[in-house]
Amino acid sequence: MSAKASPARKPAAKRSDRPTQVARDSGVKQLTDPKAVRALAHPVRIALLEALMREGPLTATEAAEIVGESPANCSFHFRTLAKYGFVEEVPGSTGRARPWRRVALGESLDLREQEQEGLAAAQAFAEMSVERVFARVRQFLATGHNEPEEWRVGFTNASLLYLTPDELEDLGRQSRDLIDSLYRERTLDISKRPKGARAVQYGAFGFPLPPMPSGG
Image 1 (tube, rainbow, N blue to C red):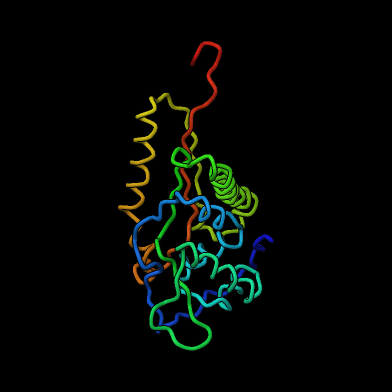
Image 2 (spheres, helix red, strand yellow; image 1 turned 180 degrees about the horizontal axis):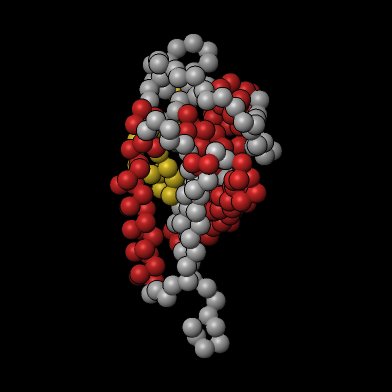
């Protein structure tokens, strides 16, 4: 079952009784357990984790309105994510409909660290995550002209570089560190997001290309 594209909706009402921090920890969960990777490689679960990052703690009913699934289905997927340490119930919550929050702010997957047992699941999750970004790029290219004028500022940047393996790895690390230093705090805490700010998809990819006959 795949997460349905949710229609345009009004921003969720602010819940003053909920914490503004979207995750318990500001760090990144390293994905090394094949079972956890397989559990995460599901479009509804990926959509739920993003909803928690954008909206903060949510009940299954609230999440269902965002991702286009039933509350019962969202509850099932939240429990599965909790089993593998991706989400947890907000401590101190009372009542039947208890909100969930992320445990870590993000997830990190290094294919080089995967055992053979989990490599297929890791590749499936990586492909699903990348395709999710590419689908949004295609959507923006098709509909970006409908955005308010001040938001027609999306950009793409593709470059052909010549790097050593160490330089390629360092470029990826520097890109992550720069984004974290500038914007991680406002991603983690809803109250730190500037007035007028919107969620923006940002992606960076770097990988070796097949060599030309000359080796270049």
